[in-house]
Length: 208
Image 1: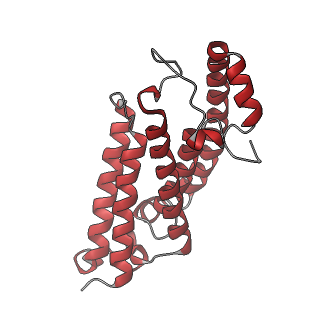
Image 2: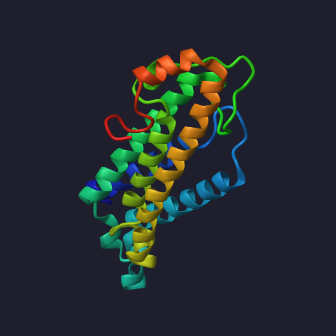
């Protein structure tokens, strides 16, 4: 009989995987092949790890390579990462709902585009990028740290590289946000300038 901790961890692995699928696929267009490939990998990883957690006796002969007891552990870092994925995903989905037909993964305006200034866009100007950075950080904490299948297979080096990539993602998101601001300013002029004065921060309130 699986323990409460095992069931909790599998439930969080499954729910965070579903949320990442919902929040990383574009709402109004077909997903890019790299997004589809990533989700295929993530679903496979989640399925295998969940099987090891729920049926450890079937994998115990692999010894330290898979180490079912380690995978069954629900660490504080895992819970924090899952919380970040929940928060980032719900923020992204809120952005999808707020922008509706105007939301696009491309840096461009759609016909009839209006400047949306309510909801999360009343707090920061590019909240979908905020959500993306938070999701990626949560993904690393859930899937690349001690107690995860990838950690058992690859060690801590992969997580260190991934944390460095988060910094790169933050820089890239900032540059993309700047490009979008330029397009919106050119299209909406004074309306955008008034909004930018009222909503000073691009991604993180009080930081950037």
